[in-house]
Length: 116
Image (cartoon, rainbow, N blue to C red; front, top):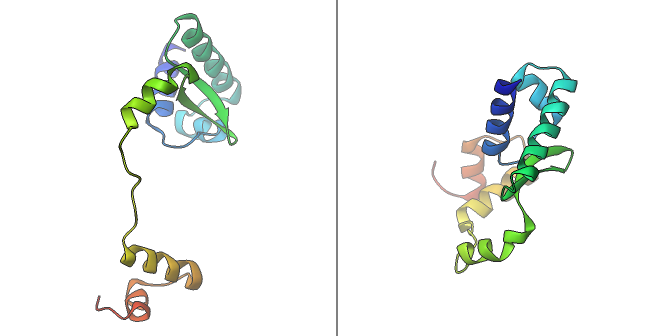
């Protein structure tokens, strides 16, 4: 079971979106009960050890999240960062894909009036 904990923790840490139990079953090749039990055990360990993060169920999946008590500290970390902006070319390309999908790169270039 210890190896399952480490594997599950690695998946949760590395994922940029919540992982569903079904996805964890496929990735870890374990039964649903084992996955759920491991999630509970990890969550309990994090709570008992007073870790700065927790496992949360969000959008039909699970993920690792920093505890809300550290929100002020994290806001200091991200202070002054500007959100990423898409270039005009990227916005045009996304608009063409959204409107015309499926579409190929040469078709996108032709619609935008640029050479591939």
